[in-house]
Image 1 (cartoon, each protein chain N blue to C red):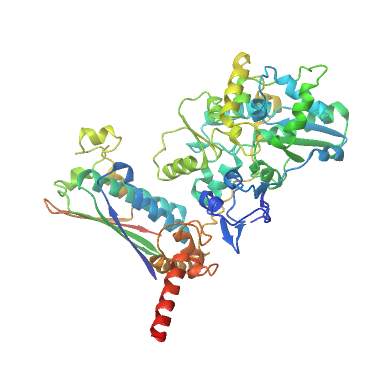
Image 2 (cartoon, rainbow over the protein chains, first blue to last red; image 1 turned 90 degrees about the vertical axis):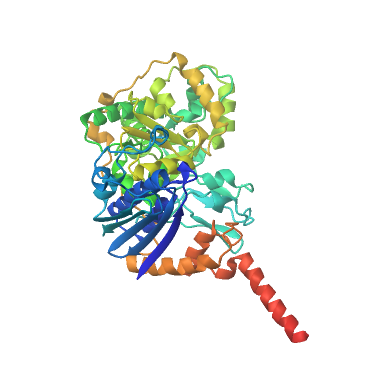
Length: 138
Length: 425
């Protein structure tokens, strides 16, 4: 038994980033997942959503919920990540001044995703896009 | 779960089955079934939003009447500080307190005194660094119950401190016992409340087994009689013993200001409170020390038991407090700080869960998602559920029918009609 969810993450409006992770959080609460699991998924997915909005002009989120794991796949057609190692460092950011002034782009996105997930796979190609697969185990 | 008690009730004669209350309930705890609103007990947090929005005055809240004073040898009035903002052209709080004595109480003890004690104790607990930050205020019982139901994960952040009402009740009873030699059960400690959540809080206290409060009166219920007494006083007793910090608990920001720590956030209005709790849950507010949340707009002065507009009441209290000392009561007045703390931890009440185990919940969610696909997504409320999503959930749980949706029903009738037309042609 599994539940599959699909969301489009729009890049038009910053204030809407977090809608998809918010909806997933509500679903996980209804399903009765443990609070620590819900928190990890919500935080990691929110960071990923913000990344897609800031860097990639939006994208899509596919969520697969099973009793023992939650897998979130974020896919975008953005510029790709040139140096994953650097991007994984806390505080390293390529976000614009405008984005930083809004309180985002502190260089904690990917490090936080890594911190809050049990497995993280990043597939990225310059000029084509990025797919991030994050798994939280129950 | 304990036996459920709610102060919010329905007058079925007055309920016309409209959609106002279901749309405003922060925990989706109301459905209209058979033309009347029903409250889903497990989810209701007694915030009083439905009472506020019901245009037919069908939602009510239980409270005691002044007759309760006859049940005790000595009665103490515990006025909430919000009471002080209810009167026009008033410049002396002692007039209100003396009026309460004229109304039949034997003594008064302002809850604002206990609020100052709680502020002092909270400052010390926070300085000790033993609380999980950000600390969420536990003063508003509707917020605490909201956290238990919708944000169970945040229960650890809630300040494990008795409310000023409880602290005041315990102190008032001790004082009267010492002065009169009466047994505790002969003393009636009666809270004068701005809100129905406090009625529930007395019947089913959070964090302790039994409340020290023996009865709860509604401000708006005693208001006409109290004003009459205040207008006909022959003398005014010097009874008021609170400062600026205590009376300021009556409006949003007051409790946080009493902590003398600028690193706090204050939010009022149940929808704003939910937004803050969502952000806190997502780790976005972790650098704050304290979060003050009040379910009512404006804070306690905005409670549904008040007689006056909450913003007017706040302006009056701000004027009244102008020449008050900062604080007149300290935690040392009660001795050991542990006496002020809850004696049991806050329990989660995840009532929004679809089922007790994840497998069953997933099955129900799949069913609900299938139903939802067929619904018009208008959230009109005509089916009696607050949204199409909520109806879909109710259908999966077997508590509603898919064609409770008037649009699906219309579609079905049209199909039948066109089939009939085909037969008769």
